Length: 100
Image: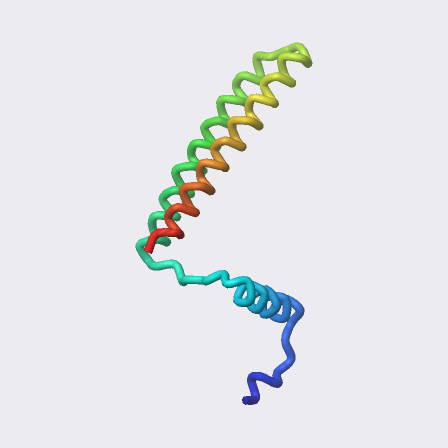
């Protein structure tokens, strides 16, 4: 009972409100299993490497691009590629978390 009356940080209070809101909305939270944690870590590592590879290629191409328009095109391509990789990563992680 002493724990219920203890002062809580604003973070703890916000998390409690969010949990209550999720419960009221019918959102079920399940803990992530060790196998899921491992799979998520593998997916993150894979996509982190892909993003790093895209960054190295972008920087290499950027060194050889001399006019501003070409640099802008390269920057847009890099942003698009990075967003696609991040989106694919997040989708795979959500798929892993949805598994039981």
